Length: 96
Image 1 (cartoon, rainbow, N blue to C red):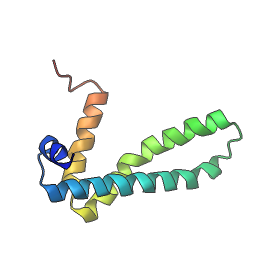
Image 2 (image 1 turned 30 degrees about the horizontal axis):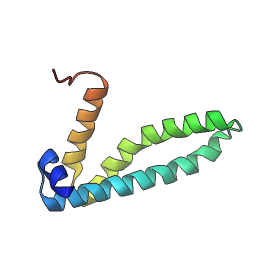
Image 3 (image 1 turned 180 degrees about the vertical axis):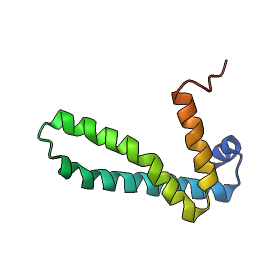
Image 4 (image 1 turned 60 degrees about the vertical axis):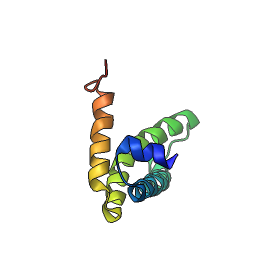
């Protein structure tokens, strides 16, 4: 599995491990911050709570991953990764 990621991302094995650590820590921090933000909104409706939680998580995740990537030395990888992700979401990078 690590070899496939290494080939896909064109990075060393150590970088794959560091990238996976950044994804893990960034995701955990995102969930933690979203749980801390949700009581401020004081939503009683379970459906609205879920929608806002997902929106907050989606907004915070890229920021957290970029912040966490700095001490791991993977900022350039994640900057490029997020750029590619947003380009695909906007339909700018369609493969034919």
